[in-house]
Each structure stands twice: as structure tokens, then as C-alpha cells.
Image 1: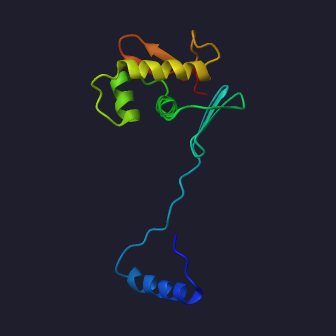
Image 2: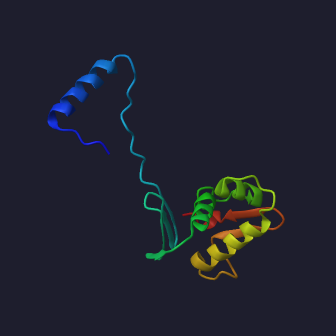
Image 3: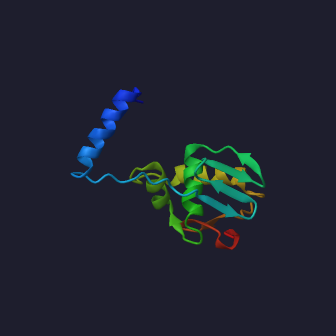
Length: 136
């Protein structure tokens, strides 16, 4: 962070005004508040928080990123490779067990009954999807 006194700030403003004609300065855009809301589950992306029936759920980085990816694409089947590449930011050579472990842990934390999941459905032989019926 740069701290300027009043004289330095005035000089800086004059410099910016002088070069503004030569370069395009875009005003900073603040991203809209992004909340994914489903019955019993709320994902507050701007705060990186997940609430289940109003109670905060602590998720690891991988669990959170996987949940946001699935919930942002309700009803769309994502393969294990697609999830791995999006969340881990790596090519998916041996991702099967990593994805299964994260999904299992995520279900234990957000599902009312992890053995009979409401939100994250398995599509046998393909991958996973966030159940569109619970998407609002």
C-alpha cells in the first residue's frame, strides 16, 4: 500500500489527468454478490461460506471448489476428469480416487443423509451432477 501526503496526492492526480487522454482508464467494477441458494443450502461465494439450514459448514478448499462447480451447473453431468481439471487445475491422469474422496467427504458435510444424497447425485460410469430439482 502506498501512502501519500496531500502534496504528493495532488501531483499524482495531475499526472493521472495528464496521461488519461493517452490511455484508457476503466473504473473498477465490483463483482455482484454471488449467492447460490437451494432448499436448506446456501453458498455465499463472495464470503466463501456455505450454510446448511443457517449453520456454517466448514469445507476444505477442494470440497468448496467442487461444490461451487457442481452447484453453478445444476442438472449438468460433469465427468470426474472435468471436475478434477477445474478444481485441481491439473490434467486428469489419475483423478478417480481423489474426486471420489472429495465427493464422499462433501456429502458427509452437506447432505441430510449422505447414503441417500439430495444434492450431489452420482451418474454411474460418467461423473456427478447437482440435482436440478433441489436448485430452487
